[in-house]
Length: 276
Length: 266
Image 1 (cartoon, each protein chain N blue to C red):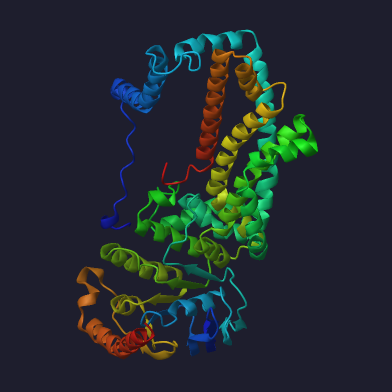
Image 2 (cartoon, each protein chain N blue to C red):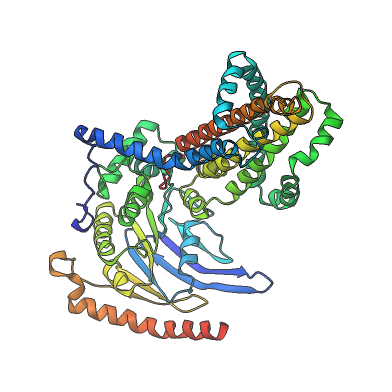
């Protein structure tokens, strides 16, 4: 009955199993393409100190950093510091999301509230969280509370602002269609506004994810007795340069893994989008 | 018999940003018996879409009123279904779940919703595409889903705002043909907005020609064509040409008027 002009596309054929080796090859190639820049960077890191381009005392070749990282992992220092840092970063991150998403939905849904509050939110967002670190330390001391609080602060704004703009940016034709279908305002919020906002909220969540680690590491460098930021800073002060680099590598791996987890979560929730 | 839709002295004035007002519609009146197919044509910017929004209850009139089965409408409700030009399908829902959306508002139980949605997707020829997301469907298929969505909760009136305007010529023709088939089968009262004269004459049992701004109804032309025989290209018959010319002549002055205004405004 559908006209010939609009013939339904044939069902997508499943990849035949005979092609499996080729698929592995293709995956390998794509992995190679994506890691070539990183490998080049590590090679530069390795060669520059060895060739005497930089002082070897201050920039230790990468191959010497790895065994130190292994030692740190074996004697438990790496794990205990990572655990401390992750607990701080994740609790701050989680609190920020729990607060900012509902608040952002509320602010975005009420137009006047959004117009009233937006300038203030922009002001807060653009005040670097680290500039406020001394204030947090002054008021909350150097304990866990102040560290978690600064992470919360750094994570709240991107999530809040993205949620507000997500709600306000919902395609009005969706809302019109839902209204024409007789849906009540709360139902429109639940069935249209909320799902339409998910991609943009996730953008904010990802920004918050990287903020949480950046800010926490800095906070741990200023006043802490544990955590990866402390490890890096203390190593530098004790002139344990290799250990300092090992800590830095650990931090960057954790940041990368965290971001990948968030991207995977985002994909799961926005599988309907045409662009993935 | 009492008319299905009765429009009495309908007018809509918008406030312009920066002060002043703008008359989109003025003194529109017509009555439509149940099961009729009215096409509204007019030059661009004459307020056709505003008229449809008022019939749908999405906006409130400045003056006059719209009666549906003798009762004044006060907002959108499930006794009318609207099909928009931009489809307005929710991209995170499959075709099936999009059709179910209107049924969710009327409190149909989940299992019955799924069955009804499948039935209406079949009516628009989309069996086998229930689980596709909108971005996996062509424009014509998306509009079929939107039509199924508006029919699924069985409204008495179908309001269509240039639904085929964004489609290519061939898809448009096949959808026009199918719309007539669905109309004959379901007996809905249809109000269809377009700027395309051929489409108006082909689809409408009556064609209302609107004036340039502020929009008024200039004349309602009764279209009296023999039952469409698709094999014989109904658009090529002499009756079709005569009706087409009549509507074209009525529109010509209005298009010129709206163009003149556009020039003096611009």
